[in-house]
Image 1 (cartoon, rainbow, N blue to C red):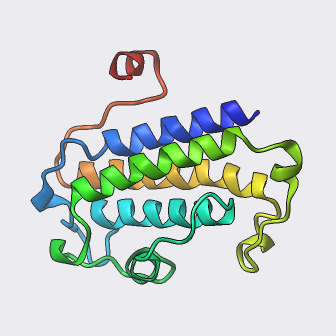
Image 2: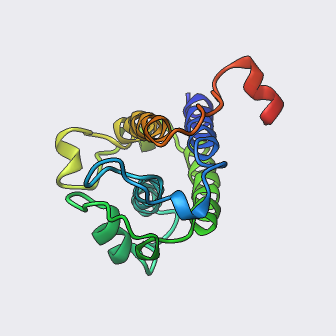
Length: 173
């Protein structure tokens, strides 16, 4: 099961990155409406989730910039239209590739009892009672934000992104 979960999260990450690969740096914060979640905000939000997950799993300590990520991309954070308020696209992509790899390696080493451990977050545990539940929710979390990126692309007249879960995506692997 862990291999399948790790594969799903890895492929979802490939989907996320495919949706922004052709977005120019200077368009990463474009908004078609006030507070629209643009690519820079979404990538930072997903990075925040990864950084937090890796700390929950005991793989890494929270990064030094965790408070900054939380303020800019956490619950209640409103996306701003200023590219200077966010990490660059290349920084976000590099960090998401790094945390994605660390996440995959950690998940593949989890035992059934690890997955059944209660989630050590007093807020999230109300909806995601175990580490396993949380990991599965992250698949949907990233998928949800991929949908937002797809909608963002459409509203900004950028062609659809490549689908990573189909046979043609194997050519891009």
